[in-house]
Length: 140
Image (tube, rainbow, N blue to C red; front, top):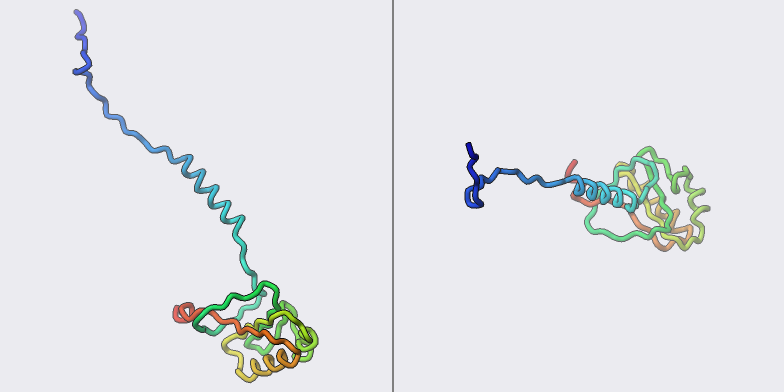
């Protein structure tokens, strides 16, 4: 007739599963991802496929420089333009900017020496040879 009354000590506890709300966490992760994608800058090299030789050690290169690229077919590029040795000498005549030489590993040594001589005769005093770390070379 009468329902049993429950006291505080007799109350059955229901098992509830607490869940972690991950929606705000996902929002924050996406915002961080977008932030890093927008704020990251990449150094773009000319669009030439050059297989650089490996070397140990690293040197920080300046932003304002000339880039001379030598392909395995014997082509010489100054930036993205094809030049010959005379054109290279004219372009680099008495410049104060450093020059970085990127030569494919299959370019004959004599061709690299001729290009370096041309750069030196043009009056350039700061020349860098571009390589890649030895660790990358061993992975192949």
